[in-house]
Image 1 (cartoon, rainbow, N blue to C red):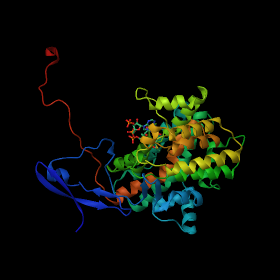
Image 2 (tube, helix red, strand yellow):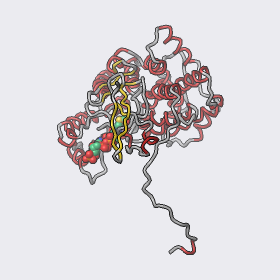
Image 3 (cartoon, rainbow, N blue to C red):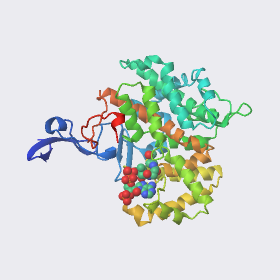
Image 4 (cartoon, rainbow, N blue to C red):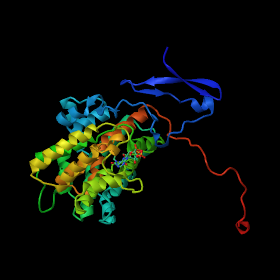
Amino acid sequence: MSEKAELILEGKSFQLPVVVGSENEKAIDITNLRQETGYITLDSGYKNTGATSSAITFLDGEEGILRYRGYPIEQLAERSNFLEVTYLLVKGELPTKEQLDAFAEKIKMHTLIHEDMKRFYEAYPTYAHPMGVVASITCSLSTFYPKSLNPNRSKDQVDLTITRLLAKFPTIAAWAYKNSVGHPVAYPKNSLGYVDNFLHMMFSLPSQEYEVDPVITSALDKLLILHADHEQNCSTSTVRIVGSSQANLYSSIASGCIALWGPLHGGANQAVIEMLDVIRNDGGDVMKFVAKAKDKDDPFRLMGFGHRVYKNFDPRARIIKKACDDVLNKLGIHDPVLDIAKKLEEVALNDEYFVERKLYPNVDFYSGIIYRALGIPVDMFTVMFALGRLPGWIAQWQEMIDHKEPIGRPRQIYTGATTRDYVNIAERG
Ligand code: ACO
């Protein structure tokens, strides 16, 4: 007999099914809880709530494990490339050489964005944050491809939308950067690979073509792989919940960008560099800032530290820390904030406050230092994260559609006023 959980409410016993995942993850299925008992569960921030069953990414925060479709992140970061990982996430299996080539070719056919969209960029002020621009333009794709709005979409239509998103997102992102520095945009160059094409659109100027540098390509490729999916995080849950209303895929991905933007999520990579710069400009006293982070009356937090799920080292942070050293060495760059970051990490990892709360560096702690070494400006960091996360969002959206999941609609416990009669304004005291 399969295991059940017993719940006793008002002296009555209820049996709840227990669900076990392929990695022995356990859950109590409360699908019929309200119907059977009249009760709901309360779980602010969904800290204990499984919103779905998913076969995409496995994450064990206690053990520091991360796998995409069963493949350890360490192996993928070392031996795969971003386009292959994209295929793996979106299609479910690693591609053969022919499948990967065909996938890459298909994407290359769609890298241009409609010329009319260039006018959108011209309308934004140059000080517009690129993340706001990227989210808006991504949402605007839905206005250029109205067939994507039909919730009864065919498989071909969905495939085309996915291809368009994967192909156009680097163009959208790079053009947001060009806009922010007031430079003319660089059109995609389809002779280049996915990552090199992005770098070309970021850094080519009318007067000087970007020259591919394998050190930079490989570092960026690795960063994108590490960000490609992370199961039911804030932005992914947002994509799934927006998509569950049958909103089109472009808008669902745009909403993921918005959720990612916040400094407690993908915006942390920008916040980390800004924090390291502040510490440096303040004289580099790491202890002072650790003390601030521990002070409950001070809103300051150590950005890039802590994670909702990892209560052991974030495995991505380990890989990034090493990649950071490698890239800076290979490029011959000495960034003084790297020294501050390492010192900060060392102090925090030995401090009782951080040890007790299991606060370790997360993926964002070192990624900003690499981005900066690659010549990517701070405002673009979260956009880089979004570029990496795009295949994960798409795979999660697709899975939600395939599972025919119902519209996402949590409940609440109401704590406001009970019923009272309306009083005319003249009679109010
Ligand atoms: N600096 C100082 N104290 C911290 C930090 C931090 N970075 N992170 C958590 N804490 C403390 C909290 O104050 C709390 O202490 P308390 O128990 O004494 O009240 C305890 O650790 C638990 O923290 P919560 O905020 O309850 O943990 P939660 O799981 O809700 O938040 C989060 C996780 C948002 C990532 C948090 O650790 C944080 O704000 N970190 C800094 C921002 C950051 O780096 N975000 C990127 C996350 S990775 C990503 O999204 C890609």
